Length: 290
Image 1 (cartoon, one colour):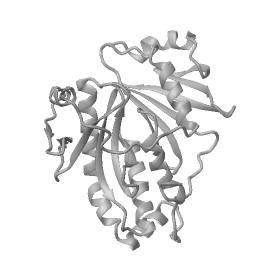
Image 2 (image 1 turned 180 degrees about the vertical axis):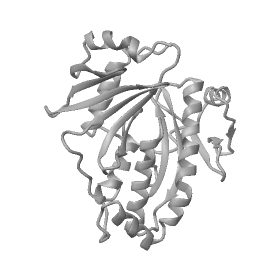
Image 3 (image 1 turned 120 degrees about the horizontal axis):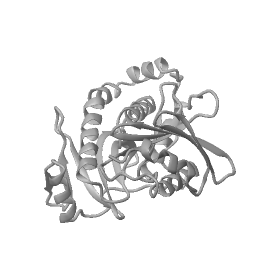
Image 4 (image 1 turned 90 degrees about the horizontal axis):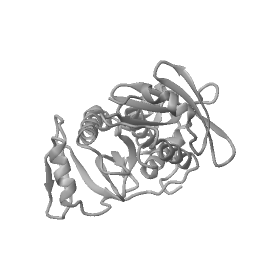
């Protein structure tokens, strides 16, 4: 395999737009300083965790917790973020960016790095566009790709392409084109009739789940009150990568199903927010349109 460690010396020597500095930070790891559109800088840690290359934003100084009313906007941000990058919630309740890349036998980071850095800079600048589902009807190529990855795709009468996930309950992911790539979407919870505390607690759980699973991110869908998980690719993924994405969506469904059901109880939701360090006096939250 052409690993990150093998490529690291060349990476440190190459010129990448937006990259101000790159230095070693340990075996199979580097710290990248990236210039942002507003003149500020951000630091990324790139670390080999075979078979993944994990690129994580590092906080400036001590981690600071985001307020509870920033939880829902984080889902909105994920919904329109460039494919690959996601906002996740740390144990300290900070919201940071991460990108997980599955390294195959022909993996070569250097030609991909400019696009990765450009997408990070766009996400930090808030250059996102809310996508809606379905984005279009999936063609036979996507259906064949699902089969090649080990997952059976079913064409619905509406034209939608769905894949049944491997969970204890019946969960389905919708497969839709996304420009030159593809988007996998799992609807997890409709929050339309839930009280604010339940919506915010569910958003926190979703963002924490995003931190534990590769490729998937918590987001909102066409319905601004619906929480779900998605995996978005800017080019058609290979079978191994698509298999990993469906597996991660299955894990997300298993991890959150019962919790989301319990958090519909407003008292339990308020208790959860207090335990995690947020105020229980939640009276309103930012809407998805803000």
